[in-house]
Image (cartoon, rainbow, N blue to C red; front, side, top):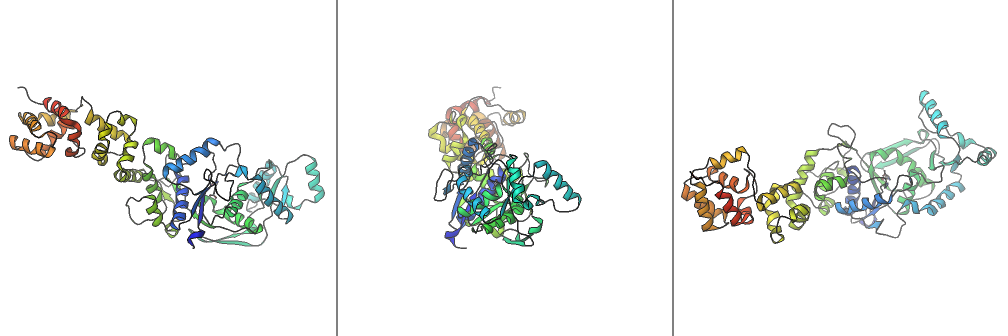
Length: 471
Ligand code: GLU
């Protein structure tokens, strides 16, 4: 494979937000291209004018960029093979329809949807493949003329050659063979004049010089049709890699509960893009380890041969694992902006970096960061019974010693704790737990050495004073 020849693409239909399934397809295409120093292209397949919306053309780009899946050619970026929205390529498609017409490889079909449904059912009942019967292929020029005069808008069908086998070597699934006799003549232009998927998708891949197509297994049976079209048009054929579908952990098809979660909703819930990328990169591709990787490293270690044929199971626990990894790998500026406005309103900006680095190992979502910001910076810690029992269980003079140690050592926790240890003669858990609970209201949390300076002398004093026994 020559590095300069690899071009992949993501070709969404802008009829909704991208969900995890689409994002994974985009990711694998990008990784394959980047692995070979190639080009990743973005094309909008907006031929369904009813359902395609400008809003989604926009949101798809926002989501891809947020994930870091930048494209080098296509919608919003330009390039030599545009336009990159199919709705703007009618003149190009027209040219290729004419070529097929001139070669006698297409014919108008006047069958109504009802007629097609009846004939499909009859074929199924007779145990035959439910393909188009070819009825309109046999119309005489006169019969065609008559129907056109009746004002029926025909679809345009591609004449599938008889008695052949279409073969291709799928990069994931190996050699694939399809008998053309099982494939009915298919529609490449709808009755309303809009071009059909099989046609635009194949023609555009060829004209945009796409070398590799990574897409869902649900497209596998479309591929022989598209290869036949490309052959008829004498256009180059890309290599295909049909990846397995994502299923729920209970192996049900992907649903709202699992991976049809939109990228936007995960972002709003507080997931970091690095978590999603690492999670998706492992879903159906084997890396052999669970180290957090940046996009470029995912690309370096990507190998088409490691794409799995088995369905990829969606697993919430894995997503959370990668979220924790992403939080621990994010730089402090990224964590600070991820923490959000509520945190920014509490934590002084001059302490931003120290704060996020102090809490990063104890947070998974921005709400956890907010919780620590409140604990560290706000008055009025609320302790539950268990925690109250811990501070009350400390030796009578314990917090008096703690106050003395604070005056002496300020917010140097190590020095403070050893001073208390000396004065009160308690050690280990009996020493550290009451200090932690009095200062944070929690039994677990970030290293005290990192957060005591943020709590500050004044708040620490109040928190110790509260538990000084007066009896
Ligand atoms: N627009 C098609 C889809 O979203 C593209 C399929 C393909 O990748 O070829 O399913």
